[in-house]
Length: 416
Image: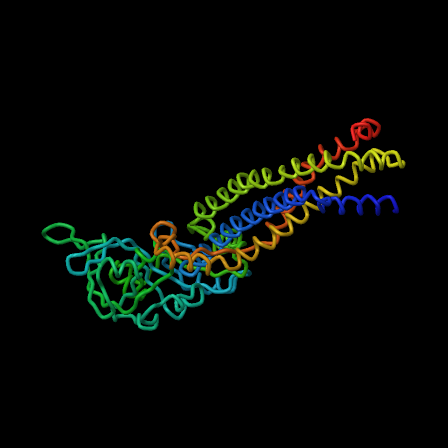
């Protein structure tokens, strides 16, 4: 215990520069600073990737349900009985019917392709709460027979449509006339504007009453499918398949993980790639410890020789410099973690401030699906970064410490 104490004491003392030799403490400080910056950058980047993933998941699930059951032929007939059973199925919180079809919307001389979704507002709110995303209007305004429609913000901007304007909805299911098959069309009045925050949805989505959509599509009392809200969103694939089998099968099932798998897989792959690349930055910063320790060993040759003549073993000398290198690594990693967490927590405000200074928007919603730079610090990521940095810092200390332990004391004293 005494030996361990004096090895740690000497190793910590060697962090301070000798009198008249301030260069060694400066180099040690640079090594600590480089390691801190590398660790902080890695934590910030991983936090941003986590923030992107969480933000995308939140925005996607605010408009889509956890899972859906739809008919193999594109419609369900006896859906009311199925709806009642699904609401009582274990793991399912609520269920709501819907009608969905591709179409085209016209306003004046402008047109745009849309995804038409017919809903029952009172039931839809139980599977996807659209209320907070409504810039104007209410879901309750979508009364059957009123032929009102709520448009995504980007879609409304492209069409130049505002609340109260009349738009014409055209669907491919047509009527047979002496002139041939003509697409069905119907005038709707814009009742509200919806902004989910994802450009892909805001540019395509158009919501109306389910009965109005079914009447336009000539579906009668049928619906396209049933949307589910499950208790555990990550269990949605298992729950929806079990529910479909319990109803006797014959359904086409989908869940949010499969519908948007490309989003989340690309984020996960990018996160792993960035972790590997930025770990190299941490490695470069950690290997600066090598140069620091080599200079310390060269400066302390006389001290090493005296310790050896007093009975210190090569193992003790090795431990002294391992302690010093570990302290450099620990201080650098601790500073990097503190800096990285602080930057991640305040990243959104920092980016907004920088945007105001330079007058440039860094995130275009049409490209990145969002206009803010979110960040989410996960303890598991911080621990993983710390583990990698500690291993690299300790590995950088091994060679200089080994060199110090092998120095012949007689030669070192003779040279001095």
